[in-house]
Length: 196
Ligand code: ITT
Image (cartoon, rainbow, N blue to C red; front, top):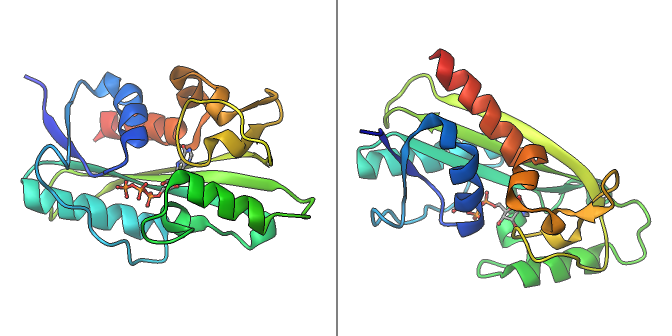
């Protein structure tokens, strides 16, 4: 029987991408919502600390191993914003549309549009696992004003991959996972877990 692991996220877009990318682990992935685990406030100032906190809390409440993803968009012209606040950039209850509108307003008249997504994945075998498995990766692109594509989530419609001439939201899930911050971090995690 496959090992049950809780995925410590309430973001459905992440769940889709993580489930596909982590298939080789042959785990039974259950979401924290399935187990009645509430989200915790993200109070740390780094992606890795937030990912650790989410994984540790989900492992403690569920008694299962846990995987958490803390990720965000880093825009150079905005001094790294929205960064760790990416999900709540336009306020605590912000939607993706609210966040994208705030991003474009902040970049109005700004020519420098380089940005990257970053993803930190943490696997904890238990709440008190002293050796968390940590994987982290970046995906570089440019922020464009006109949204394109219906796939993905979050800032994807405004994140252009110049070499492809497409936004992240124009990529099918498998292609996004092949290239993205999350897909790369998942492959690192697979490699690290296969050696532990
Ligand atoms: P959980 O904490 O429950 O996992 P969350 O959405 O609050 O869900 P984060 O705090 O890690 O997660 O914030 C990540 C935000 O960064 C996410 O809500 C998007 O706005 C953005 N983001 C991360 N990865 C992305 C991707 O692949 N495509 C588009 N936007 C992404």
